[in-house]
Image (tube, rainbow, N blue to C red; front, side):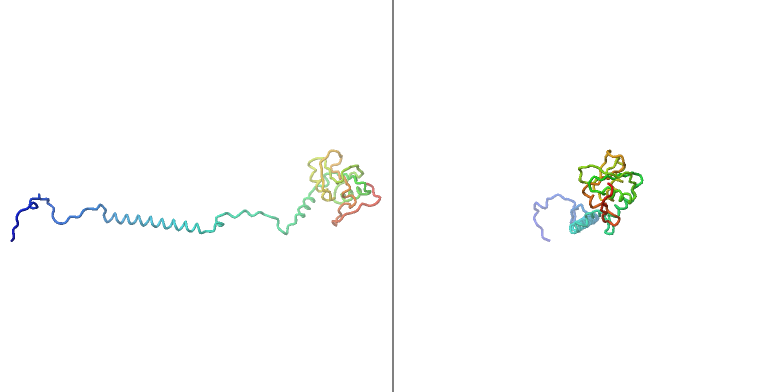
Length: 201
């Protein structure tokens, strides 16, 4: 066996280490599994979030807006004139007394409108002449609670103007002026009844 002269490496102190030694990195196999599971859960949450964002962006914006409330309109079969006729028919005609005055200068106009008023169920207490510069026929009512009757009577006689007034003794006073005197009041058939020649009022 060959021998070699002693050198400086032969004088190192003994360490007690034998064989190969590996450094402990601090992460075991169980820790690696936990880390992989956490990463997988985070990845799944990210995928779900991205999918929801994409789905929302591609949806129809009109579907997210509440539809406007549908306004209830009258049916084509409903006639508004029928409602007006019903309200006129519901008026208590016997609760008021009516006076009819001819302010037009047309002979017989007052009597014609008085007859039409009575034919519609009103109580006519007085018929006569009246001086007025107003060319528009008017139905006057003495108190506010008689306005409904005044409006109904005016509608039946083709008069467009009603007014509250304390100048007359009757509950309702019809003053026939030149605007409708010659054509007369509407008759039951929807036409007009011309005043008779020689009639009073």
